[in-house]
Length: 160
Image (cartoon, rainbow, N blue to C red; front, side, top):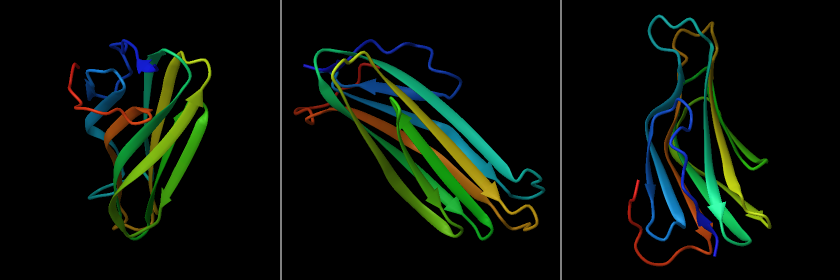
């Protein structure tokens, strides 16, 4: 049975909380400030980006892993936002036009015959028209949920 292994302590500079289910088949990362933002009073920078990388070792046999990234997006007139998520070389992108205000889930799956690790990268981009003083964009990751498929049954617990 495929499971998440011991998660390395150092995962880069972004701060997050980690919860792992008792059966080691699900994990949740929650963020308080993984955000790319541009605009606002006195803004001069037209583009901002943030990058998060996460490596989770895997143990066991062949399997499929699903990651869902929950993102909040707010763009005003003259601004856009983009999220790029990649897991072990499989990439998915979502672009958000001006006047977007919503929370979305961005899901990626990958299968492996030789499980050693999940390498997840999430890039946030916010951009604004620098000639529009009212243009603002904010894109932030709220949480990332990872699960070994088929979906685990039973109660998820936190072992941090």
